[in-house]
Length: 225
Image (cartoon, rainbow, N blue to C red; front, side, top):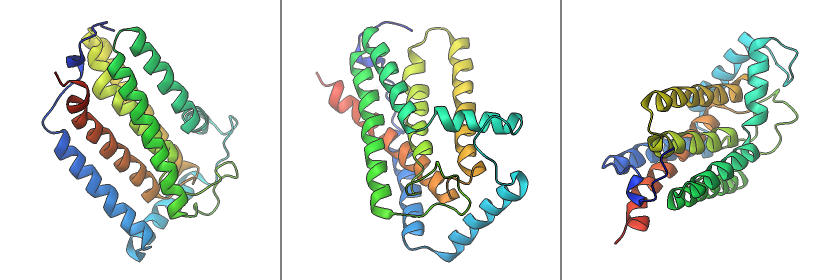
């Protein structure tokens, strides 16, 4: 990683505001559909859950159900909210030690604050989880904590941290691996019937909106003369 200390290392793009608006609109729409329990949307979610259960049954989170179940168990276990927070702290500290102090602080703030908002939303909305969810997946369902936290961290790394790496091949390989990991985490939420589809969509859209909002605000806060 390039150890430059100039705050201009942060990628500034004009489209951040537009991206925030689109993802924010998707989140708001999903939130309203969930709050008002819109029948068409609920039926759509139920059909997705039923499709997953017809394809995969009612899998248990252990390492005795074949390769796919092993992968799902791994990503569900090690990329929950608490591990994501730990990874965020580690990445943030590494950035600070590499003299990317502002970016390191920004990263930890974005993930932590987004996670707190997600917990508040869960407590306010109080949406039940799908039938046949695993006992370990307790608590409320909207938004998905796995989806929210992993989206915040992974896409923050892709957009902000990876550009600090000099070697293009390394950036591409790490980037695609992170995207694959992200997709697997989202898939695991439906695979284990831990969440409705709307919970995953809500977690992803909120996280992207929060991420792009804070990316748009970064120059105004950290790059002022």
